[in-house]
Image (cartoon, rainbow, N blue to C red; front, side):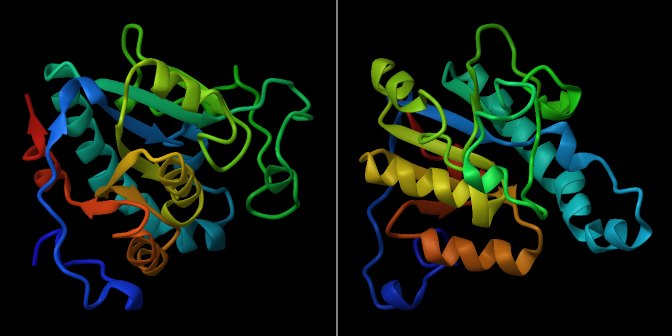
Length: 223
């Protein structure tokens, strides 16, 4: 089973297979969302640390290494790589959206200069690669990314990062609403659990994006 038939929700169970994907390099960019230091720091609480062990394993053994390889391929092919990270501009976080101010797990106070807010070292931006700070889940809503993509003539956005059911989902939906062609690379993304990850991929696939593997992604690049 390949990308054309996987991750089908109820709405698309009987839909015909989509056409082949061919990406013009000058019109394509890779978007790496929220793979930041804060999410890879083990909790000091043993119970919390145990709950997040599967996520940490997926990130360290699959998502980060696979994303690093894909980034390198894009750089070699001369395709832009853009990074989005949750980072507030004010140290007290007044500029954050309500969703990031609410108490609970999603509460985030990550000043843009803090170490916790930086992209993990394995995926560190290079040269003049664009890094945007966002104060909402959606990379489009919470930054000037929309303007940047339009100015650069980008039509196709290859999405990777975390969390599949939160910032990835919000960004993908926003991009689709703005008529960008969106591809989500499944093995370069993660949610808190695999169940949430695959459930959200089925919801997004075929309407907001196409979900593919990193191996399939490499075959779509065209001159």
